[in-house]
Image (cartoon, rainbow, N blue to C red):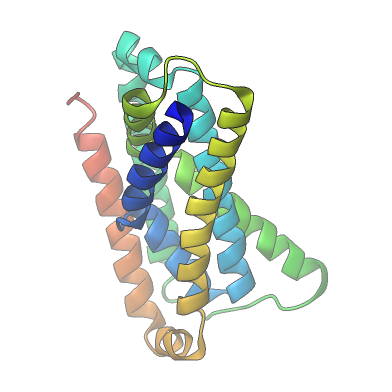
Length: 210
């Protein structure tokens, strides 16, 4: 019963956090409307795996490590912020280029793999997400737990992260949002790129704060 209560507490809190807009939402939304529904779903699977990475780290004591080594958290913030700035720059600089969508064969598989890796790297580059996971686990995790509990928790975390972003990908890859994006690609990409750079700079600027 204690493990079930802990599981429900962790899942509920993480679900609320996942719904909050951030770099992950911006990235999945853009992939879904600019590439394809499958690419958006591939990115959402990368988000799910990234969530599992954070959950596994939290189970292994990530919170205690970050408290013991503050410099590690600062380094994660700076590196994560720089990566978000890089993604934003790539999106912004590509705004003027026409859209080319891979549809069949090896090129499509390569595109899906790129989307998956983009989702994964965007997720794991955000140290704030790591802190959220570490804090939530520290608050709700029982002092001792079974292997079955740990495995169940990892599966549920994956379902929450991948499921939510898959919904985003499916909705935004429908004909209406996609056609709207194609009509306003330059402005949408510049806005998305600027948002990503802004989030990255904000993250870097907060590196000195606990």
